Length: 397
Image 1 (cartoon, rainbow, N blue to C red):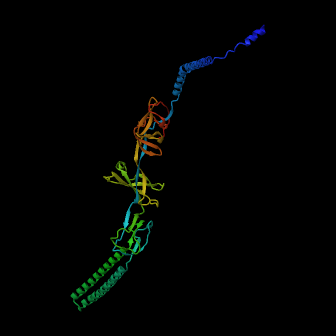
Image 2 (tube, rainbow, N blue to C red; image 1 turned 180 degrees about the vertical axis):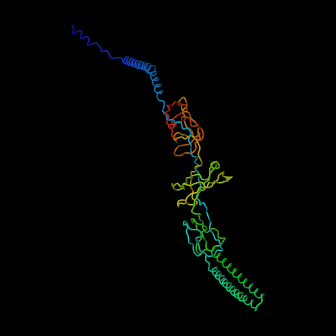
Image 3 (cartoon, rainbow, N blue to C red; image 1 turned 30 degrees about the vertical axis):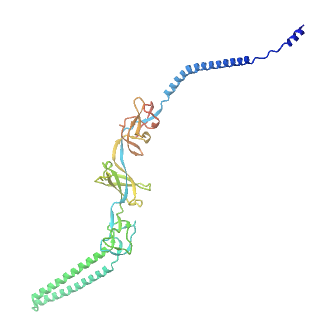
């Protein structure tokens, strides 16, 4: 019986799956999954976006309150600062002496010195041919001898006449004539001697001599050259070898500058610094350039070459100003400024005018009284109104 039932069942047709129903089941499954994902996202937003961010905001506010930057500040006060004036100019001999022909000139036989050589007062620099002048001097010397011989004869005749007049052999009138002859002969001797002395003096001026002791700077004459009083300068000398710098200064810088002020001079092309002092301040101002000349005396040194260019730092007195390190001073297109910390510990920008920059720092000519708390460093990272934690640093006076 069971066999028959199983047999009948096996003979019934098999049921095939419906494709549309299968796709419907898949869509329902995807919709359920999407709904679950959306529910999880919404739940996460409620948990993280509403509750946790509130806690994070509070934590962020607390950390920001704790991250107030520390800055080092100082109260600069007022310090005595040297007024140092920077200047440019040229080197020159303090007393530049041109040397030329003092006499009538002639043919140069020899030049005895070279540039850079030291000479004494009256030393011969160049010799001029004097062959003609020497013959003239010899002729005048002979005339002196002749005049002296005539004087001797006239004196002897006068002496004999004096002996004979007492005996009555000659008259007193003859005696007087012989006395006059003697006097004329003596006068001719003096004239001849004067002519000889003049010629010898002229001959002595033929040689070109140093007017004083010093250093020969230039030479513009050679042996064989014909020179005269119109030849101009043949040598240039620095009197006693003393040098100077002629610095050009603005009218404002000349104010308060006095003779005796100390200076440091550095020739171009070298790092050597030569000490000097101001020995002359120009009494006039050039109406075109509005500048004046300050002359700085220097000791001789081969590195100081007249005509060269140099820079100078002149101490022109002192003044009382705030002094800050260079790190405290910032600059932008508006000019120089510093940051100060106010009573509420907030950084504030302060425009300043800077003065002299030295190894000790930068002097502030305007913008500060010296009693402010000035940020010494990290000013470039601050903003106006930013809260800071100032750390006071003692200043050295």
